[in-house]
Length: 303
Image 1 (cartoon, helix red, strand yellow):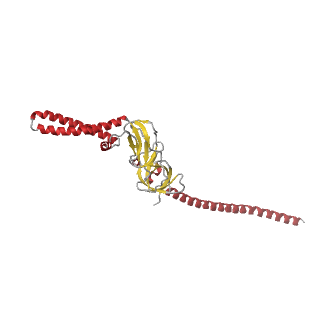
Image 2 (spheres, helix red, strand yellow; image 1 turned 60 degrees about the vertical axis):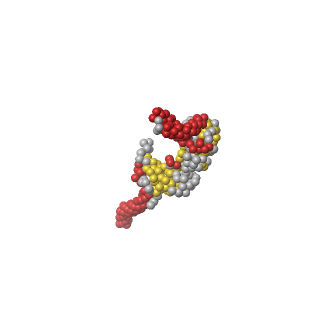
Image 3 (cartoon, helix red, strand yellow; image 1 turned 30 degrees about the horizontal axis):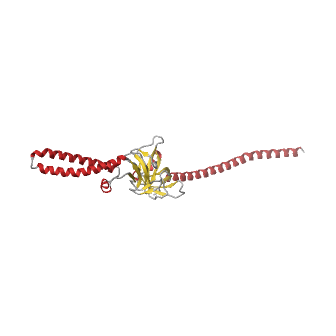
């Protein structure tokens, strides 16, 4: 009986020791498997991150975007004004109206304009008489030395009137009036203000009866046939810019339609407030709906 109990005890002791030896081995295997899974997962994550990083870097490098505005070149916009002041007698302009070069936009009422025309016509008539008198005195002076004084006086009168005529003609031209039309058509009552270029009227700031000082703008005219885009480029992207490079851009409010432009100028000064540089590109695919000041987003076109 004692032998039976001892045998059972020994078997229980051996079973207990075998269980303890198996546990650490099992734990190590589980840990190794867990580590193996984790390592594989990390490796896969690294592979994924690497691919994403390469893709992201490629996208950023190939398609940087720049904000900007549509604008009109300075030589395609004009300010309508007069070198003399006056009251607006008539007005034939509305914002957005299309006008052609030489078309009358407004008429100015100023008595000095009438006086200037009168001075020109009087000087023109007197100059013709004084020229003939000068030629007559020259002929007489050639025969009589005593009449040289009259010749000199006649010449002086002729030159003074010639200068007066030239000065009044220049003033008329500065007002946009051809002096010869005064001779053929007579004195004009009102000074016409004409469009210096063809385009669209904008910034109209007058009305009938308003008095405008000399040099005060009446309105502006813009020609939209060859617009530009003005882009804001920061220092980090400035090396990408070069005259002649092509760009593509979209205009705010015009959907996903893409337009093309070519860089024509890069400003040489840096904005002190945000350290940016202005880059100008000429639009090659224009649109009738373009308006100066519209917001655009542009990027360099892949060659």
